Amino acid sequence: MTLPAIFELTLVGVYERGVPNRERLVFQPTQTIDIGQFGILLGVTGSPGMAFPIRDNFFWFGNGVVSSGDWVLVYTCAGKPTGSIIPNTNSKVYTVFWGRPTVIFSDPSIVPVLFRMDAVSVGENQLLLSSQK
Image (cartoon, rainbow, N blue to C red):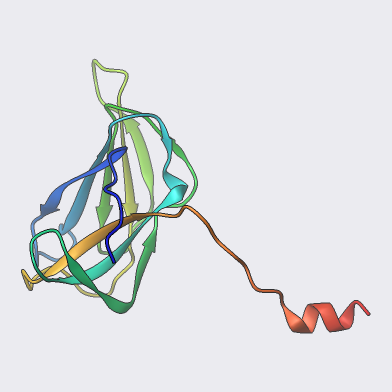
């Protein structure tokens, strides 16, 4: 399956691969976006520009607006999200945490797969529906 590229949020890179508490993904938006529309999967590299998703490895950024010039850092370890203004600029740095118990990018064949959620369908809770009758 081939999907269109994402241009509004750029994956700058994976930094300090395999280093506990320092391993991170760095993103930069190219325009103002709701980052809640994006997520990350883990994949195994295939041919150039392709990856095969690894089951049960999903990260959602959470709701929030980021703008061109801002930076978003996703540390693979646990931590508390923060945001701060870059001195002498109008740009911000947002730091979020995946909460993984170990590093995940020590194997160079494991890559992040950034995706944008364009549609969704949510199932109904059958227990809740039956109790409302």
